[in-house]
Image (cartoon, rainbow, N blue to C red; front, side, top):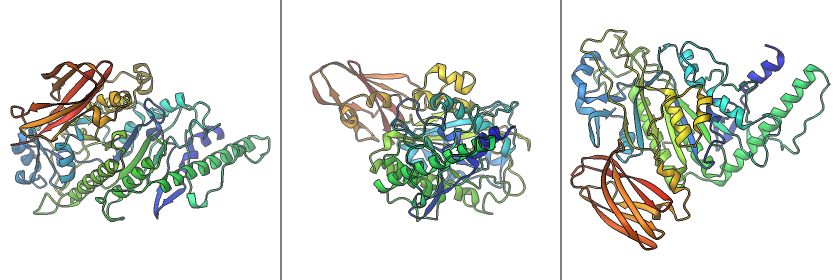
Length: 526
């Protein structure tokens, strides 16, 4: 590797602190992982990636109640008591860890998509290698120098960093808040990186020029470094400006310093509300490598893992509440991920060892709430080396978000992902239709009460002409044709009898001319 290649691949390692209201954060706009969606599809949408560092124990996060006896036998010293598991609406086969009360409530309201058995073939079980695979999108037996998001950015930011920022791209494509270990996240020839310094001490980036340097190989490299430094200052200014324009509204955030994940998400909400055009944010929470003392002796629903899951649950809930109060909840999706899960059997140290697949959460007001996949199968007598079987390749999750949230074409998907991966019904595609209408979304199609028990009222707006409204279950099966007739221009209401519907999440869709809109309907117990 020559000096130019070294600079291109390593310049992003120099992270400079950004301080907003006393919270120290670091921007990692260079990371292909967090910038892969910077300019894809709908430019108003934001993706927040939450990395759970260490390998989260999926079996104690989502407990398979339909196999509880086998689950308990496989991990007697750490199993969550059956009467402590948090059951969910519409699905008696599984439940949340008892510390995840907020996340369970979000699930019940249709704001969480739980995807079972996410992993990759031929799990490596190494923290560093598995993380590298997740972030580059490689197979387990290949080493790729480019990040899968870096490959996308190479097509959207030609000649970067020259000419950036500009009037079209004034803000960093992505931001990482807080420090984390990241593998080689790289474009084809150089890092698409940007360091962000403390905005209280930044200098003004004026005209895109740099001080002259000697016309030597080392001088050219110095010129490049000076350009990156100037961009760093410019991006720091836009972040400070956005932070100054917005104030968090949710009162659900824990006291600063008590939950670092909540602290990070609080800043994300503020920057999005402040008008920053950054499309991808990355935050993290460590401590999930629970080989020992995962639970408290004699009280397995408490302990180190319970504390971590509680922090995730309360942080995500406060963040979602803040987005709603700030009026931006329909623009943001979040996703959790961890490099691997844990083994089926617990060990003798009240912990779990490195495993393979695990559940993953995508959350927000625009997800198709519910479960994708089935509970993992627990054998009667699992060996110490047995892991949960993979149901969904993690790259299918990425492809689904690229295609359905950011509207990336199939051809571009195949190039970015270096293959064709199945997509999953994670995103409510009705979100696309709603954003195209001049009528306010809540007036276009809604229902109340929601959640409903025996009856709900569906309110819809017609531009005149025929209106169709159909009810679907989570699998996409049509259950009922509610409306199929002409309505004059204006707002209308119809009653929907939900007394015969089982508890769970449903979807109803309206078609009026070339307009389409979809909404979630949650039916609760009587």
